[in-house]
Amino acid sequence: MDSFKNQLILDVREAFARLKILDAERSYLDSYVRDLAESMRDVVHLPYPSNFSDKPQVLTTELKRLSGKSQELLKLLSNLHQTTIQALPDVSARIELKLSCEKMIRAAEAALEALTPDQKIEVKNPGGRPPKKRVQQLAVNLAKHFERLTGKRPTITVDSTLEGNPAIGEFVRLVDDVFGIFQIKENPEYFAREAIKSLKEETSQ
Image (cartoon, rainbow, N blue to C red; front, side):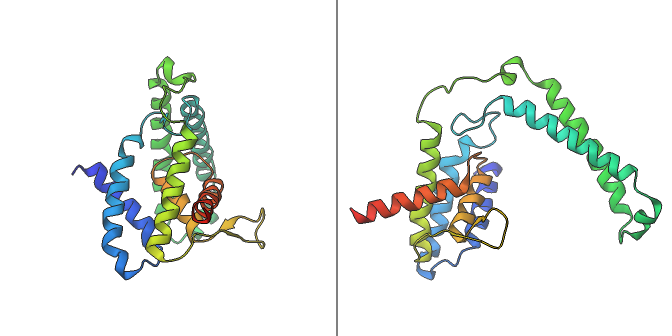
């Protein structure tokens, strides 16, 4: 088993570790996590995964933004007053962060220079299942296994005390975590809601 798959397994297992798993399902969880990592390993960390929603031009946009934000932070760190620096509990933290910013700027600029012409323009989806269809299937799969592993139906509530009334709950957090692990640039709340809707339709038939 290669180190890349091992890391995916660890990341997915950590996402599920936040849930209260039924004791009787713990052994099944291990096999499910491995199967999920295996099935998704080929669509993670690709330059522009056509399996999902990334577009090649995202590379240029995000690299430029990364470089710009790093430069802004570096400038801020360089212009701090001495009294502010001395107030920091760990004065070496500023130096370490400055060095990290400089390293990130160099890395982003090098990545921009290394981009090929094909990576700077949008390309058509090479075929296969529609990207959003695959994302939806993953979300539904997570919903079904959430119910099996926890014994609870996946639900979503909103936090009315926060701006925008963001969705909260164990299931939407799980979808958010898994989407992040597999670098799926889609709205986890939307697909979590669609998965719950799909699950209800299946059980009502």
